[in-house]
Image 1 (tube, rainbow, N blue to C red):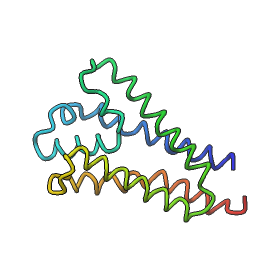
Image 2 (cartoon, rainbow, N blue to C red; image 1 turned 180 degrees about the horizontal axis):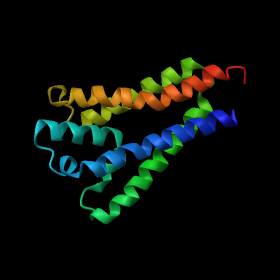
Image 3 (cartoon, rainbow, N blue to C red; image 1 turned 135 degrees about the horizontal axis):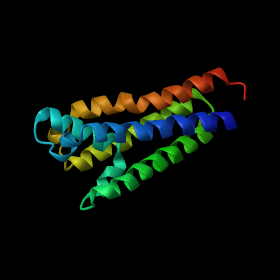
Length: 146
């Protein structure tokens, strides 16, 4: 069980750092999300870097704190998932729960108008969120005798 928690925390922590790297590489798209390609990147960043929503009005130097907060958020989520994931079925349930939360975040971001949802960004974000779940699922399947 300790190893499962470690694998889950590590995979979700790495996931929590990957998107801020994308944000750092594409700052113009995040800053000026007007063209469709830029809006798509902006929407993906918002969906996979949820602590960036707290950046309104903060100076750019405060973004390091948001990256740390994103890392801590995903590490906590990973630890919780590692603690609760003893079967593949429970992992699927947690992934569906995270997906519903992501859909709610996308709804909040678009003003809860389904016509305004960025469905492509949501379609990209859901498989991206599935990657750490898949890593934990492989570990759970391999060590199901715990």
